[in-house]
Length: 332
Figure 1 (cartoon, one colour):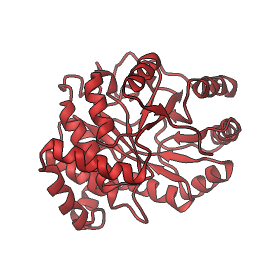
Figure 2 (cartoon, rainbow, N blue to C red; figure 1 turned 90 degrees about the vertical axis):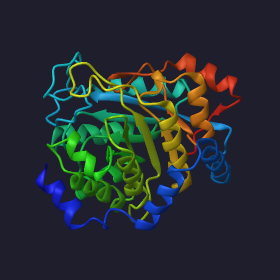
Figure 3 (spheres, one colour; figure 1 turned 180 degrees about the horizontal axis):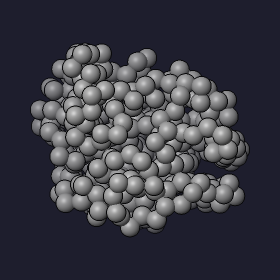
Figure 4 (cartoon, rainbow, N blue to C red; figure 1 turned 120 degrees about the vertical axis):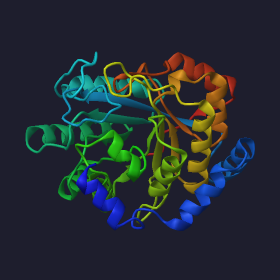
């Protein structure tokens, strides 16, 4: 067990979770699924346009050779996978990707780099330049670059960063079973740094890693208990088992479990964008439609989500057309 993570869990069990929120989640989790979905859709319509889905594009601007040992990640240097490492991409290449994403209907462009924490120096300056350049395209600029300090967060905000993604992955208790190179407290501190700088928070987690229903409830409770408020954006991921990682043999998540978590996330974090993220390729159209009905209002488009397979853009357009949905327009 990671000693730092253990101290957060054992010494401060109530600092991360509002027990009233946890009680509500416990009640919601036990509801019949269709009743839960109906409640979630009712709340969804109060806070969002239920006919719109935001298209987002996630680009891996620096891939592989990550020193973290996250058991789900093919980019970890601890495991032998098919992922080929590459250094930080040239700014022109990233801008071409961003322009293509916009032309394909995305209103958010997220840049992901496989760092443990955001380095200083030339790499940091290149990130700042990328943020400024992508922002000019009238896209919501999002980054996921590992842990960042408060000072770095303010500098990214000054550059025009709209959102920073930093997932908590799962419950504090289960987290230590999946990652030992970074504590849960590290994750929470980065989220605090983001909030202090006035950057919007994107934070969610991964289902299907072997966690219990209690872990799933506590995972959502941590997110909903964040101060001063819950994340602006909550990606709900289903594990994509990748050969070479410790979780390569995990069975695929039951789609109904995913729907249940999407619905609860929508009810307890009504104003957030609930993003149907990794693992969508394994879902049939009917399961995705049920997720949208349960309150998911954002998807990541393209052939890949960082390095894992994703549903293709053509299929996404076909699906939302069948459902009578439309891509959300830019709001900047």
